[in-house]
Amino acid sequence: MAKHHVTTTINGEPVEFLCETQQTLLDVLRDELGLTGSKEGCASGDCGACSVTVDGRLVCSCLVLGVEAEGQSIETIEGMADGEKLHPLQQRFLEEAALQCGICTPGVLIAAKSLLEKNPDPTETEVRYWLAGNLCRCTGYDKIISSVLDVAADMKSA
Image: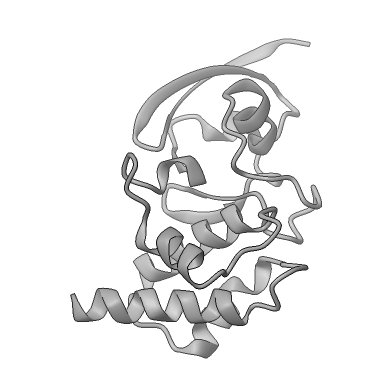
């Protein structure tokens, strides 16, 4: 099967890769580019573990084809921190123990970051609604929701 040449930007860096037509963006990120932070939880877009942003739009990378990345700007969990300095959401998740097994965490963090970029002062209901596509089997969500709300409050007061 022929491979397609794709030129894109991932976490602010220009990237080129070859992929087969049927390869998902998740498979390309993990298998071709070694960006293993995004996880495959369901392969059907139901769990959000593979969440990334494509041109600022939150998507499940298991539902996007790698060839569709052509010319797009993609952000993954690997690009969330600024070098060794964690993003405030990552730091707060650690401080408040808002993660446990870690399978859902990258997708939840990317989704939460996307929310705060679009709505820097969300209500609890808005956070719960926005993160409804990210399933967690370990934490019960309370610490995740409070972490997002705390970061939003910190950003507002800064």
